[in-house]
Length: 431
Image 1 (cartoon, rainbow, N blue to C red):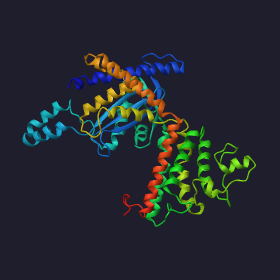
Image 2 (image 1 turned 120 degrees about the horizontal axis):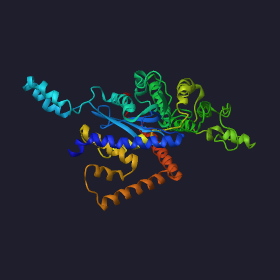
Image 3 (image 1 turned 90 degrees about the horizontal axis):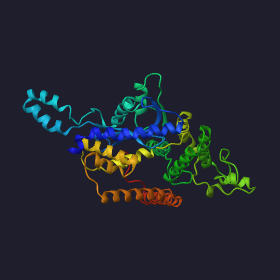
């Protein structure tokens, strides 16, 4: 209870420290002088997360992370359930309805419930709160929002205009989430066509198999990451599609990169004055043009729209926010019930460690008046070293290549099992 009683003060201290550091870094980076009263416009990464897996969580959080520094600036916890209201309140309402109104007035100050909508709208509502208090609390305006597009957050902020009509909030896309859209769209396309009696994902050469979809998604991801302009991205995406359509009789490699170092075997052979090899062996994503072009064309047109690709030019991701979420939920496991205050405490302490490292736990202990010994300091130092070494190891190219190889092998084994069993035995709504 001691932790919860001073939670508001701890939250204000943690995020004020973060904002102070972010303002200093932005001032240095942009070569300007900022006073405490000046309002600073910044780009932020916003994402939500939920305590319970699925779509029925009673508690959700929304977190704002500065794009330039990767520091968490603010967070808000949404809750549509109060255990005291459901137990004491309901019992009092049934047995002593006249006393319930007076009890409710006193309880409102400590009630956990601060939202009456669905769990899916918690991310949107948290954004309304965070954007609404950014100027009053931190003298910041979140004018550029990097998000995943999973919810209606951007549409809602554009509608309410938290900074007035003169300030427009712009949106940037997380390239990791955008690249996944192609795989989702192609799998849905195969499913929808199967319902109509049309087979796109058969076993023959040129079919839209799961392995082909996976490779096309990887190529789409590389095109988004590697493109510096919208035109570069669009050309690279369409090149991967037309490369798959190509045959010995009708090569379609005009959009593929030229030169001996090209990933396209056809263009590489032409640059070296050598005859190109057979398409049947060297095209790793063979696609039947006559059969697949009509259904694939609208999918690729939608995912190469200028408006979408323009929001991907910056090449940014939401990895920092996803990392923050893991720091929060390790303190408040998703498989156990938790009240709103416990989640708030996990968010604040998790954000503090995310911003300033494991040593921040010492400051939290001092804030509550706890004494810290040498063992706690040694443990925090060891955790910091482990985190740094893990980050270095994760970045090694050898590990990345092995991860891709293992993933491809697992998918190939799964496809083989499905084929031997005579087709998929489980698929949502397919039987």
